[in-house]
Length: 230
Figure 1 (cartoon, rainbow, N blue to C red):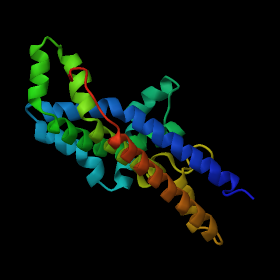
Figure 2 (cartoon, one colour):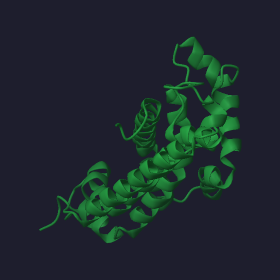
Figure 3 (cartoon, helix red, strand yellow):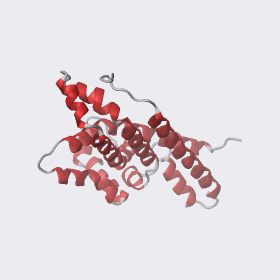
Figure 4 (cartoon, helix red, strand yellow):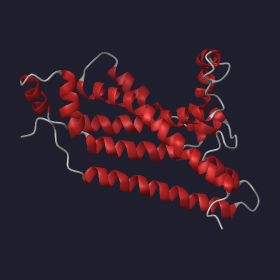
């Protein structure tokens, strides 16, 4: 007898795919934003910090509604995407977008703290030895920030995997397309006799969270060296 029903397995696979794509697409801009906040002073920095944290402050349903207004079929960005046959509304890519938006602040906060913890003297020493800005970042700053990066990735993946409010508001619940594990769990709770299925999905969600935590712990314990170490 299978541990999960077929539709539950589909929801689990979809959630894993959505979370992975959301985190992967969020990582480059998160690194850029975190480095900018950690290393630069500029006009409007407090405003940028506030905007980046909004998804953590606003109710997820509000975030989903805003995404629908911008990326829906009638939204300004959505109409452009429709013309390019790249629509994300009511598709799994839209679920990944919603999950990425909700997980993005956690990634930025973790990375910013990690960048701020790097000794600036090491970066300055590498620059004095002739290393360019990109090489300093790739060989000094980023490797020494790996604990924060690993923690941020674990938090972001778990947040994206468990996203519900923004996702169901933006892309609804379409079996095999946008019905992620949290949505499937909610619908089981609303269905008479669905308690056993909801319990199964709850244990699966706990298992995924534990795996993400163990992976982050393993990454944090790996030895890290920079190119400029003796």
